[in-house]
Length: 495
Image (cartoon, rainbow, N blue to C red):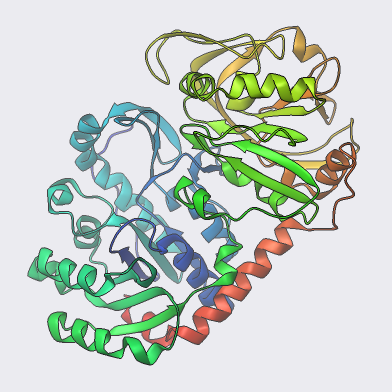
C-alpha cells in the first residue's frame, strides 16, 4: 500500500452533503442517485462519494480500478465518468468474517473483520484525499454513509459516517425508512446515541418509502422535532421508478418480483453472489420469466436456461451448489434439453476443477468443478480489470461490459469459444452448444447480443434499450424527488 500519511490538501471548489441512514437498506444509495440526477439537471456538476462500501457488486473505472456498482449508478445519474475516488474503500466479502479490501481501486489484500478494524484509521487519509479530489473538481459532492452512523462501538475507527463527517467537517441529513416501521424510534434513538457535536451536524431528517396520506405522519414529525430539534425535510413516497433501478446488494433480491413470460430462465442465488445486475436486462424482457432459485428450492424443471452468476468465493459457491442438490438438478435439466450459462465465477464452476493454491478466496486447496466444460481454473493474486467494447464475430453484435476476476482458466474447451470479440476468443461453448460460459460481465446489457441469444432459444426479444430504460427510471425518480423534497433547502444545507 502507498504511504497512508496525510495527502496534499486540495482546494475545495464545491459543496458537500452527507446522507446517513438509520440502518442498512433504507434507500441511501437510491436517494443519492436520484439527487445526483436532480441536481445535475439544475446545471450543477455533481459527484457521488461513499468512503466505504461493502458489496460484491462492482464496476470497472477508466483508470483500471473498481468501485461499488451503487456509486457507478450514481455517477451515471450525474453524467460523470467513473472514478476510483468515488468509492475509495471497497470491501468484497469472501466469508462471514473475511473480505478482500480494495483501496482507491486496487486490491490491498484479504483481511479478517478484526484486522480490518485495526487497519481502518490508516485508511482515513486516503478517504479524505479522494473526497478532496472530487470536491476540487465538482460543484456538489453527495456523500453516502454506510449502514447506521450511530453504532458507538464502531465510532473510534469510523471512516464512513460521523468519523468522516467530523474529519471533513460535513453537514449531514439522516434517512429513515417508514416501510419498516419504527422510523420515529430509530431517528430519536440516533439522537440519543450521538454526541452533542455529532448531533450538531444534522440539518434534518428525510423519511423514505412512505405510503398513504402525508398528513398522517404529521404527529410523528412533531415528535421528532420535539425530541431532537431536527426538522423532517420531506417524505419520499413509495417509488415505482426506484424499483426499476438496480439493487445495491443481495438483500434486494428477495424483493424482486418474478415476471410472467413463456421462457423460464433460472438463476442460482449462490453464496457471495456478485454483480447480479448482469441479469437485469433479461428480467426486463417481457417474454422472459426470470426466477431466482433460493437455497432450499429446486431448480424449476421447466427452465430453458440455468444461469450460474458471479460469486466472490468460487469454491465455497461450488460446495453450496452441491449441498443444495442443484448439481443433480442441473444435469437433469441438460438431459431434458436445457442450457447452462456461467458468468465469471459461474464460468469457472463449469470446469473440471478450481484451484486456489495461495488461499486467495479462502483456505488453500482445490474443489472439483461441475465438469460440464473441459477446463480448469487457478485462482491467483492478480485481478484482471478490463472494460470491453467490441464486435462479437459469432453473433455479429456489439458487446460491451467488463472483466473483473482473480483467476485464469485453461483447457481444451477454450478452443471452442462462446464469443469472438474483435477476433479474440472469449469464454467456451460445449460441443452440443448447450453449456456456455464467459468472464464478461454486462453481456446481456448489449441489446443486439441479447436479442441474438434469445432468438436461439426461440424467443423474439423486445426492442429494449437497457441503457435508455435505466436513464428513464433515473429521470422519473428525480421527478419524484423534486416533488417530495425541497432541493433548495438541501442545497442550502450543503457546505
